[in-house]
Image (tube, rainbow, N blue to C red; front, side, top):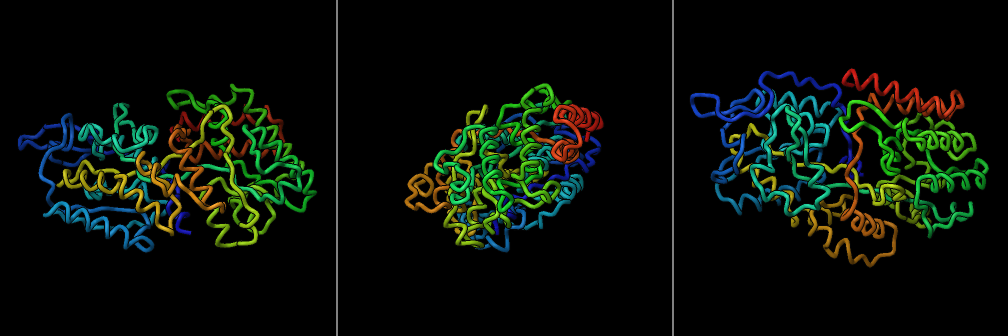
Length: 458
């Protein structure tokens, strides 16, 4: 429901044009004591070295993505609390629809020097805006900004500026998690013990194979389209996907990649996956809710979806640990972020509000909202009894506690592939799954095609 909106991933970064004059942050430079951020004139305190100072007074804009309809009361309350704590401040809330042009529109706003003072961004948008110099370097402007956050999530808040230097231009806000969701009855029919989740991706594949043999076409293990698994499975297995500089693909160098593709081809041939799902963008939601797929989505919000849409299947649903495999810990995925515009005319207000919005108290309060399935990024929030003292034995309660425990040590080092590169790899795996080429050839060709695109900057 609401979680689908909250976890929407915007992948239009490849279409961006960031060729603005004077990109990057620079201090001084004008006779009036001003400075520039991107192509915009800004207060010199917004850029360069040194902690941000100034009165927390003035009017700012705060932009979210498709939250006002469902969470208006909550965010209006946060705004009211902030304004009460800081007399002389006004926060004007605007809500973007969050469509697939979000990143390009946001960059255009930045170039026009009209971007919101405080803005909710995802990783692709933060990458583009940081490189172009439009976001406040929060790590420099407030050296204490990292303190509330789980270290791994603070690490994800780092993006490269125009020179390639990593700087903290975002505050981690909320995140999802990864777990196994499965139909206990279907697993038992296949001779798979629901109480003993596999510890490796290949172990999970072996369980898929058992389901395929037991089901005989009456139900399936999972969906076929590898787009759901690339590069997530590779990351979990410790397969290096890209070179350190991100300019070339290296996954074909690891023999386990070919083994993975061979497994996918075998599972597809043996009926572990619906034949018509190979190129479908549908996730397991519908078929799982109909009792036709044994394993559901790895997103914790999926459990609530099943509860709301299929109570009978929910009664047969359980959750377990996603295989740690070679990574050794759970994968958390990249969170959503809050950034402050370097172009803000009232940067002290904007930074204060961004930190207020993402503090432990407000993160915890939002995560307790019954209409949202998200997890906080502050250490104190994850220690809250809401997550740690779960009394319910229902799947959703257990999912909440499992993910909260994971997030304290979870890996946030996700491989970031552009849609073009990911699709090129997926297409070759699909050919192997159809038996049109060998696993080895598919991997070799996938890497070659990925490298062609990476050289083009795609």
